Image (cartoon, rainbow, N blue to C red):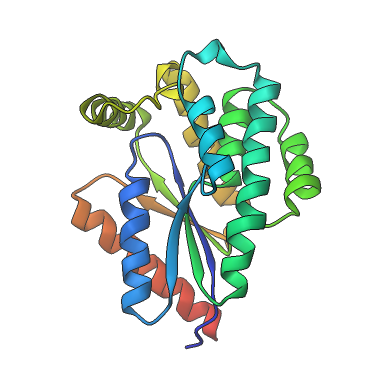
Length: 217
């Protein structure tokens, strides 16, 4: 099996366990001799982290949906140009907690903005850079929201702007992720995120192993 660097994105509804899973994937890849680092969106760069604090905090009416989309895209431009592409060019894999799939889900399906427009911005501004593999952690949004709100409260993190939106919004997010996976099955794998952390982790690692085996053929 080759040692080529790959770009992984972990996606899913709020509270599905993305952040912890990113760390497990990075550890698995490094242990297997595939150098990898973790990153996140919005964020990943000093510029992106500043935008993250603006986008994820406060009330839902803090931003017009068009401004929200453009700021998410601006953070991604910095992330891709300063982190993602340079890291891959050094032969190091990237595992990102969210990427453009989240924009399609949240600003597209959630907010009702045109997916074609989102993809156009991604192509023109970001450079049409897509992950090699998208891991969708699929979970009932009601369960995920309860988990996410509990974590944000316990850790006193002011990043709950999207958690204030109603359950229908989050159901649209979930449907979008599943639809993205159905339309592009070679690039996506959907993982049942219900179960113990160990069970979900084993499902993800197995899916990555199978995908890497297919890529090496």
